[in-house]
Length: 191
Image 1 (cartoon, rainbow, N blue to C red):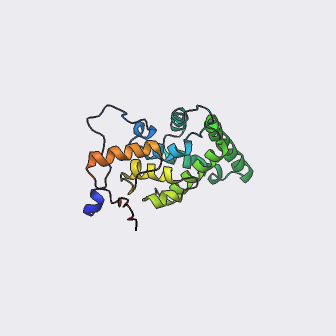
Image 2: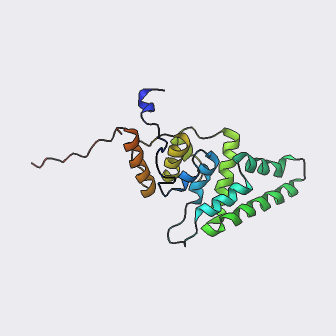
Image 3: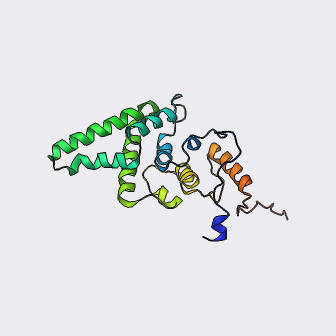
């Protein structure tokens, strides 16, 4: 690993009060499956006060690992049963996932994205970069920055646009004494 990459490693909070940041990611540091799910459960602004933490806990109880969900999805069609039976079992599994996501709104979309991500990662492996994470259906800049910071353990080159991730990024830069290569804005000279 080059010195440039070493200087960008995300520091682990030490000597701090537990959960010093109001990020659900902090509660699940080191759990890739939880970190993958968190962006899919992000609350919708003005959709009520449903909290992703409770939904995430229910999902982790039902499917503690990505492999547990992926295996259940695979069993829908790979056990030699009739195709109609497999489709019905898939429908039941999807409806269960939709039910868990219902308090957050957009439950069907969230369920489909979780199923797609679990299937893709089970087949192709975990994303290795921010760009790979962006290829997951439903993963946007917030999700990719979160994945980069909490799963891969690197700071994005620029401060994330999300307010909470941005504050965490500020803290991480100070803690790790990282010089992030962002060119300062220069004042244009007036003629």
